[in-house]
Length: 114
Image 1 (cartoon, one colour):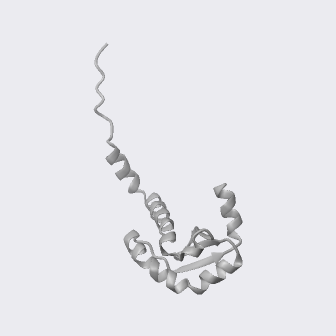
Image 2: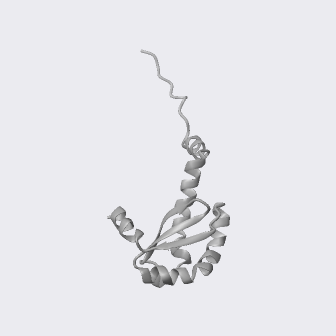
């Protein structure tokens, strides 16, 4: 039996590079990173009461809120939150134009995390 040469394998760098050339995957990774930055821009008292839920067309991020009071409070601070998000969005090359706060999404969010 002859020797088997394993020279046709792709390196991990090549595989990741080819995966990241997929625009949909690139967008998903950028959004995931954007969601991670949410806690960095949020006042401490809202960190356990709101979480990014989804993105809508046109650069609108839907945020699940624990209750309508939290949604209203965050809505009143929307302009400040968008300003704080700007440096992160530039780095990720994502346009975030608006935030939508929805207390009805919180139940869906809790079901997905449990």
